[in-house]
Length: 146
Image (cartoon, rainbow, N blue to C red; front, top):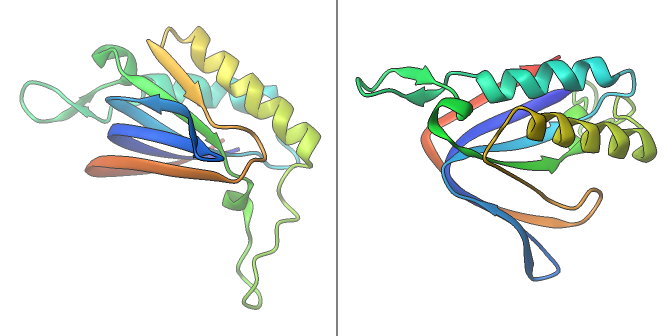
């Protein structure tokens, strides 16, 4: 799995003109599932995202986690994170999990993140054409691989 974690002041996702998920201060997580991923990767990454110390403490140091600040998470599936652009000009997505497996592991990751006691966990709609808005705080963007 690969996750792009963005520290945000706010974020929302819209499908068909309707907001389906929105958060305030926290993390917007783009999640890509690799064809060889298992639940073990999702377990590891859910814990990592919940405990990643990228929020500022009282001294302005990145020393606090999503849990520490009582933050929120918006989780959005994004198979294009598995795109390989090493040859030609068109990305190759053969490393991405097939839709059924990708959906199952994405939903499992969301479940595990909720079990991490995150105050609010919202999602997009798997496989949908989504419009994502965010106010990147910092900006802070971290790429996490399992």
